[in-house]
Amino acid sequence: MTCKRSTVELARELQPKFNALPGVTAFPITPPSLGQGFHERPLNFVIQTSDSYQNLNTVVRQLLDEIAKNPGIVSPDVDLRLNKPELRVEVERDKAADLGVSVEVVAKAIETLLGGRNVTRYKRDAEQYDVIVQTQASGRSTPEDIDQIYVRGRNDAMIPLASLVKVRESVSPRELNHFGQRRSVSITASLAGEYSLGEALTFMNQTAAKVLKAGYSTDLNGTSREFKNSQGALAIVFVLALVFIFLVLAAQFESFVDPLVIMLSVPLSMIGALLALKWSGGSLNVYSQIGLITLVGLITKHGILIVEFTNQLRGQGMEMIDALVKASAQRLRPILMTTGAMVLGALPLALSHGAGAESRIQIGWVIVGGMSLGTLLTVFVVPTMYALFARNAIPGANKSVAKEQPDKHHDGDLVAK
Image (tube, rainbow, N blue to C red; front, top):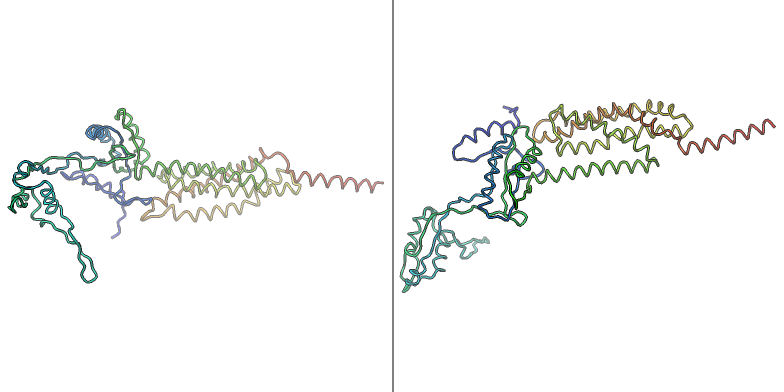
C-alpha cells in the first residue's frame, strides 16, 4: 500500500497526539536537508549572558511564555534544566577518623562499586579485555544500596559505609552550557505547516528584544545559523554573478552599452521565476535562490544571440533597424529551441515527487517560470532597448564604409576625366 501523504503532513498529524501524552515531551522530526543531523530541529536560538544560571533560567521561562503564543513554533524546548535529581553523599570526617577510615577510601569505594572502575586488562586469544569492578545492577539502583557497602577500617575491621556518610536527595543542573565563552541556553523548536524558518527567526528576534534585559544577547546555531549564513552568501554570489557576466560581455563586445542591453533580460526572467514560485506554493529559500543564480546565466544567452548578430549585420553596412529586425527574426528559432529544451528538461524537477522532492521542485519551477516568461519578454524588450541605447554606428563599420566611399568617388572621377 502506497502512502500519498508527505512526511510533513504526517508530522503535522502526529504532533497533537504527542502533546496529549501526559508527562512526555515528544515531537516528530522530518528528514533534514543540507547535511544536518537527523535529530536536529530547524529553530535553534541561543541566549547568552554573564549572569547566573538561575537568572538566565528565569528570563528563558519568560521568553518561552511569549513563544507559546505563536502557533507556528511547535514544541519549544531548552537545554537548561536545573531540576535534575541527584544524591549527595557527605562524609562525616570526625567519625571516619575515629574509625580509622580516610576520605579517600570512602570515595574510591563509592566510585568503584557504584560507578565502576577499570582495574586492569588481559589478553586471551589475540583479544584484549577490560576488567571492570562494579556492583551488579540490582545492587546499585536505590539509595538504600549504599548500606550494603563496607570499607576496611582500623585493625582490618569491616565498617558499613552507611555509618560514615550522610545521603540526601537534591536537584542540580543537568548540564551547564556555554556558547561564545559565555553562559548560554539554546531554545530549539519545530515549525508548523507553512511557517517558514525566516518568519520564525524574525519573531524570535522581536520577542527577544522585548523580553531580554541588559547584559543578554542572542545568537543562532545549527540549521538556523546555516540558514542565516546562506542567505547572505547567496546574495553576494548573485551580485557577483551579475558583475562577472557583465564584465565578460563588456570584454567580448568591447562596449558597456551592449552588455547592459543584454542583461535587461535578467529582471524579466526573475519576474517569471517569482510568479512560478508563488503559483506553485514555493518560497524564496536556499534552493530557489540557487535556481535564480542558474537562471542568470541561462537567460542572458538570448540577448547575446540578438545583439551579436545585429552588430555583425551593422558591421556589414546594414542600417540599424534593418539589422535589428533581421537578427531578431533569424535568431528567434535557436532562442525558442534553447528555451524549449531547458523548460522540458526542468519540468521533471518541477513535477517530481518522493524523498527530497521539496528541494528539486523549487529549482525546477524557478527555471521553468523564469525561462518561459523571460524568453517571451526578451524577444521584444532586448531589440527595443537596443534601438534606444545603441544609436551610434559600429566603429568598425564606419571605418570600412568610409574607406570604401573615397575609392568609389576617386574611380568615378578618373572615368569622368
